Amino acid sequence: MNSRPGNPWGALSALCIGFFMILLDATIVSIAIPAMLRGLNASLNSVVWVTSVYLLTYAVPMLFTSRLGDRFGPKRVFLVGLALFTLASLWCGLAGDVGTLIAARGVQGLGAALMTPQTLAFITFLFPPARRGAAMGLWGGIAGMATVTGPLLGGLLVDNLGWQWIFFVNVPVGVVAVVMTMILVPDWRPNTAHSFDVPGILLSGAGLLLVVFGLQNGQQYDWGEVWGGITVFELIGAGVVLLVAFAVWQRFNRREPLIPLRVFSDRNFSSGVLASVTVGFTMAGMFFPIVIYLQTVLGLTPLHAGLLTAPMSLLSGAVAPFVGRLSDKVNAKYLLVFGLVALAVGLAWIALLVTPTTSPLAMIAPLLVCGLGTGFIFSPMSNVTMGSVPRELTGSASGIFNTARQVGGVLGSAAIGVLLQARITASLAASTAGLPPQIAGGLSSAANVEGGAPPDLGSVPAGVRQQVTDAIHSGLTTAAGQTLWLPAGALLLGALAALAMRTGRHTRAVRPTPEPAAS
Image (cartoon, rainbow, N blue to C red; front, side):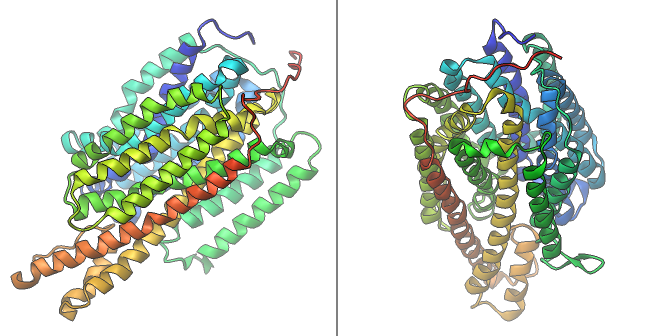
C-alpha cells in the first residue's frame, strides 16, 4: 500500500486537475460580479457573500481536513472533496437566486478544503527527494496559471455564455479528474492512527471563523455593529482570543495536537509559512484595482480585459516547471526571493503607469513581469517549505501551509478592498471638486456602491457630462494606482522572510524517519 507507484507523474497530473479547479474558482468569480448583480437581481453586499462564504468554508476547516488524510488516506479524502466540489459547482450554475448560490458556494469551499492539503502530502510520497523539485515545478505551474487565468476564462465565459458557465465548466473537468484519480493515484495510507484533537478543532475553527468573517465583511457593516450590539472589531477580537487559546492548548496537549508546534522549529517551514501568507494576500486582492481600472476607466470588456492578462498567465505557466527543476540544483530560496521581488516590481510598475489615457498595450510589459514573478514563486516556496518536514508530519504541515495562504488571501481581499474603496472616496472627492455640488455630491457614494462602476449619467446636463466622466476616470485611476502599492509592499515582506531560509545548494527533503508500523 505504501510503495511508490510506477507512474508518479500520471498520479500527480490527476491531482493537479482538481487543484487547478480550486484555485481557478478563487479568482474567476470576481470578473462575473457585474453579470451576477444583473442576472440575480441582487445587491452588491449579497454578491460579495458569494466570494466570502467560499473563503470561509475553504480556510476554516483546512487544519482539520489535513488530518483526515492522515487518518483515512489522502486519496479517499481527495476523492470525496473532488466529488463534493464538482456537484456543488453544478448546484452553483443552476442557482436561481443569490441565497441558493451562496449556499452552494459554501459547499464548494468545503470540497476545496478537503482536497487541497492532500496534494502536497502526496507529492512528498510520490517523489523521492532528488526528483521533488520537478514535481513541485508542475504543481507550482498549475497554481500560478490558475491564479492568473481566472480573469481571462471568466471574461470569455461571461461574455459568450453567461455567468453560470464559470461554474458549469467545472463539471466535465471534475468528472475527468475523478476518473483519473481513481485509476492513476495510489491508495496510499500513511498508517498513522491519529486521534482527533476535538478542543483544538473547535478552538481553531471558531477563532478562524470569527476573524475571517470580521475581516471579509467589515466593510459591509461599515466596521460597526453586526447584530445585537456586537461590533465587527469585537468579533475579530474574540476570534484572536480563541486563536491564542488554541495556541496555548497546542502547547500543553501532550497527546496529539492539531498543530504539532515542533514543526515550526524548522526555520524553512516557519519562513515559508510567512511567505505563503504574503503570497495569498497579494493574489487574492491584486486583481480588484486592476480589473476596475481596465473595465471602468479604459472601457475594456471582461473578455478584452482577460485577454490583456493572458500573456501573464502563459508566461507564469511556462516558467514554473523549469523553475521547479532548477530548485533541485541551486539554492531555491533565491528563486523564491526573485519571484516575490519581480511580482512586487510588476505591481509597482503598473501603479506608476496608470493614467486615464494609458494605452492598454502599455500594460503588457509590467503584466509580463508579474507573470514571470508568479512563475518563480509557487514551486520553490513549496519545495523549500515542505522539503525538511518529517514524513509523519507532512499532513499537518501541508494543512498549516495551505491554511496560511488562504488566511493571507482573506486578509488581502479585505485590506485591499477597504483601501480601494477609501481611496475611491477620497480621489473622487478631489477630482469632482470643480463640479456643481448637486452633481459631485453623489458620485463618490455611487461609485463605491457599484464597486467602482460609474453612476448613470442620464440626469447629468449634457454640457458637463464629459467633465463628470473625466473626473470619475481620474479619481478611479488614482485610487487603483495607490492601492496597488499595498500588495507590492506585502511581497517585499515575504521576500525578507524567504531570505531567512537556510536551504543549501540542494533541497534537504524529508529527514529519514521510520515509517510507523501498520496497525
